[in-house]
Image (cartoon, rainbow, N blue to C red):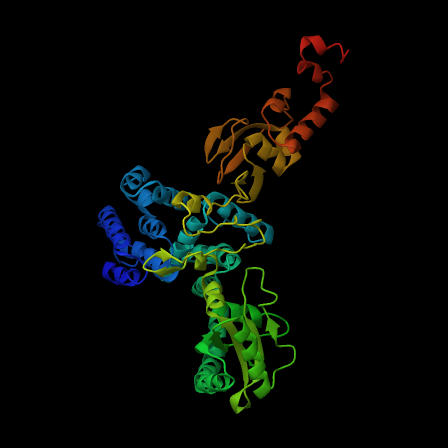
Length: 502
């Protein structure tokens, strides 16, 4: 990836002033990374350019986000600081790069249960603070996976598994189906190499056969719809992502029988509007016999991540089984890029007039705020609307073994101890936060790794009640004191009220 290539791509979507800003950021980044190379031997700046290109050319994010993608590794890997970034590119770019730096601390530990993974994803969003930070991190991970073969084997496996279990699901829940599939397919051979080889052996001949069939019949189907008076904007083949196919073959219903998979290669039809979606379905079923139970209306009943389309499987031309997907251009872009599709810039970086973003209700984000940019709204209002608020009052911290614990903001090491186990809290004498000695009263921050130091016997003090934040810890401390230290309450009461205890 070269600067000239990226600039040529960006010129399709951004105006002259934005391109000048990008050029200035490139000079800054190239100088900061000068002399640095990746494990592949390529200059380090090629990675930064690839991230910026994906954000700008594919997702079409605002220029601040594209520039932040170009600069995202600078605070960690060069002598330049966040202060330098703020001075040169402003508060917003610094804010985004700072968010990426924080997310770099999150690593998948040696746990793979669903609760742990779910909490890790919550932590990821809690630390991101702004949805654009998540998108930069996903673009960063995508390119890192493309060059994963140059890393040591242990690191390959960890990064690939982390991508399958954390990053791809986040992309999925943001409705970014194409990115999810890319992340999974790139990680797949490093996490399950034997299964990957087995799958490639199974699909080799069948895939080529299906691809050839779809190419042969797409013009026939196109003419059928044109005869029915339907205007087609695009018609092409869509290959099923490998990891998605693998997961399907693992189900008992399929049991690795590739002949039972009908959507290895599907025909994707893009039409002008909603009415044409249903008209196309009717026209196709009038000519080609549909398979019972294979019609799925994801327009009337969209998937949880917002995916919309009509799927049907028919006995197509040559009497072969063919899956067909029907959608509008807007539905297609949303299926590919999800939440990022709402940054679609119409001409040279100018937002569409009156463009609004509908609510996206995700499983573990209560709701990305009712954010939108309308003609006339201020830049600060738009930026504010991109924040993720749902987790702002929660923190996520690790045990030494990598378990993630979800606590309220302001929670202390002692709150953490009682959250892990009552006995751990009762015997606590101190803590280590990120390997450094700390007090039980010290407040925790997102991403902290906390180790509790203990005595053999309980060391409960009534002073603990003065600084713990959670009702869980407070209740367990009071319960212990009630049983073991009569008169503890009088120590907390002013002298004028101690007669009550007597």
